[in-house]
Length: 355
Image (cartoon, rainbow, N blue to C red; front, side, top):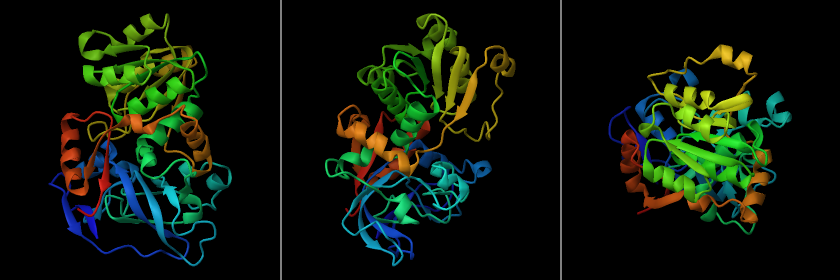
């Protein structure tokens, strides 16, 4: 089958023929219907995140935002069946550790990152293997087909967890999102659906315009002002209730924290680059004096996908509104290369894997 293969970090990616996966006894194989092209794939291609355990040994198949159709199941699988259309989380869980048993599968003690770790070749491929399929293959309701769900991969479901659970955003909250790439725009859309008054911050007018289309009540172009956080505090008459850094660099993280009012909550969604290597200086005394909470957010528990899917079914959320364009598998390397200069808008999705 065809797949996008990382042969060497920072060198051009290629489409190659690789072996089709076979289901492990507790696993399943899905034909990939759609797979988002995400900046996290770019980070992996660049060789970032060794401090996070997300640095596979080349050659390795990339891709971590798939939806698919089950084509084979292992002998020990109980609930997943051939022909089912499924959403596939990127943060595979084991289903048996304490975290999983307490509804926190997204931070499973035996976590395996799809497309980011040797144990889980990615989904820029015709087919992908899903370990522990009974927990990691999330059946889609009949009203949401895999093509429609292709936009609710990592960026969308991660933003849902961040806004709905880790904030959490309540009706009437002032919410500021710093960084309006795919994950930031998803957060804008979701926070708006949850009743928040959303302020979007970015350096590019076209991304801010998209944020307004998705429900932002105000925007700040950080390149046009001396103090982006100060602008947010002025707009919100004292600061936001919830802030999020959707990029993962020092400037956006600190600006997001500094945008908060007393008693506010910051949600860190973006992971850092090699420049920060996981370490960002923050105003610690402000956390104390203002009683600010700092919450990390990773993925979405399979057991809580139903909340997001219910909102999609009722048209409160529309992941397809984030899909900028669709490409075939040969277009994936170019889409990732464009992310070097942040030249993507919304979520590109690969929908053709056999051309």
